[in-house]
Image (tube, rainbow, N blue to C red):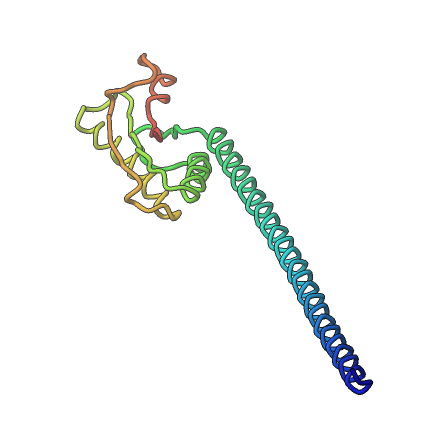
Length: 188
């Protein structure tokens, strides 16, 4: 073998090694770049998931606070309705609402405006007068409460009225204290 031949073979082997080395160096660089891109993408995805979870938690807290405020308001209204009572009294032979009745009805109106409940207004009278007259007077009383509620914003279709006249007394007797208790409208 000649020196030229041997030198050519050595040169070819060195060139091949250099090429292989260059290729593996490019592969390693590409692999490192790909790994870095995956790491950055994973970090971004984790940060985005953490941000989304924090936003969801904030929304959940806001929703819970809103629900608590709504429950507290409903409790406050229920307490006002309970304090106001559900029975409104009238003077003898009258269907005019007094100031106390209006204030109590306002509590019921507020409650009705916050929900979709319907009510039944039951008109009553004392035993004085004819049955027919007392049924009409009980109806006028129930209608007076209904009209006040409607004027305050409650839809009329959510209010039913009925008159029992003198048929359902809560107090028996022939004195003014008994009569006074029977001249009423009850909200049911």
